[in-house]
Length: 261
Image 1 (cartoon, rainbow, N blue to C red):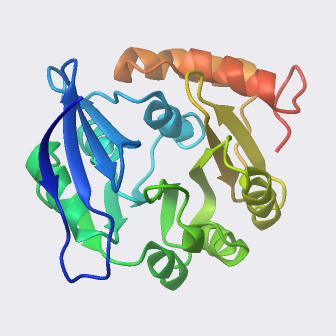
Image 2 (image 1 turned 45 degrees about the vertical axis):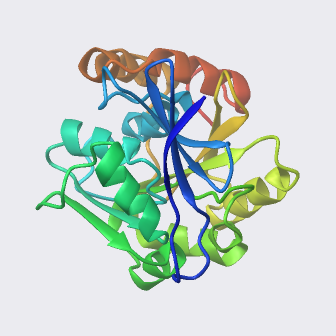
């Protein structure tokens, strides 16, 4: 893997250095090591290269027309770019603590400049969520340092704030690592914060597990309805939503006519 650029944040809180590498026509973002935080195929820079990012977009199965969304943890900006390009009626606020990550997303990963539908904020994601209750239809949380999930974004209090951050009928999506020794603790905290109204979607190729949390009134599609919506979204976005629906059905406690929320 050829390392062609390295950015190191100086004098700003001791953030992990941001590293950029390329291999096989794919550009990668790393934080303080070689673990991949974000990836972009150079021939198709607005596609979602990593499966877990495509899985996080499955929030559209439950809330297909969000007006306001928030993303905690920018990475290379893959999800932000996808929402900005494909959901013209949605305003997205992305919050990232590490200024080097924001700079890298704009310099190396084609993240567009702020406009009326995209705002990137350098700041504390936990504080942002806590201080703006009942303000978003969709909340996406994908915040890791070089080794593990950021603890401030995985506490019981944070997940409770995520629930409060959503408007009625809102949905949150959390990216967790199933291989992490505290995975069960985080999953339990999310379940408690959302009153048990959760679904999991494991990524097929890696240990990422997307956990969806729902704020009442709950979505009411049975799996037949979800499958039809997945086929429609696949045609529009080119994402493998039908396979995601099949996987959710296999990995959650559901009946034939709907899912247990």
